[in-house]
Length: 165
Image (cartoon, rainbow, N blue to C red):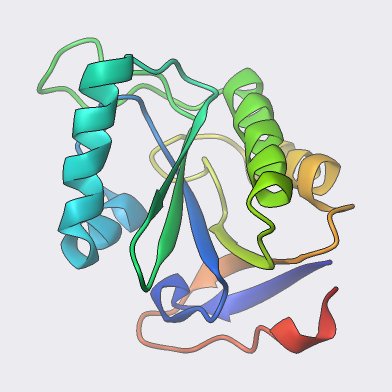
């Protein structure tokens, strides 16, 4: 079940926050920056994982602490220069990353996932192109999928997680 809300995704009651990044991302913009500030260990672990595995765009990486689970969806292209911003997101990368997210949701027995308007900020994609991909890969899962359509800092969204599954 997909629910669209307005609010601050960092205040979600969902089991998982999934968001878009690039391989070797520096987490310098948008939600990635907020996550870096709240979960510096996640960013350190992500950098280590990227250094060891050299992931490609279109993949997903799950990070868990005792209190939080974050799934980094590699929707954007890797920066060409170490100091440069990541490249844009693409239909292909988003499609593959969401496919991996759906597989992770089933494998890890996830109950709920919160997502922003994936790949539409720094990723530069149009929401009209991304939203159908979310429906395609996550719409038929028997879990709550919460899409944060509008960011409102400090506002808890009405997620209604107890109505799903």
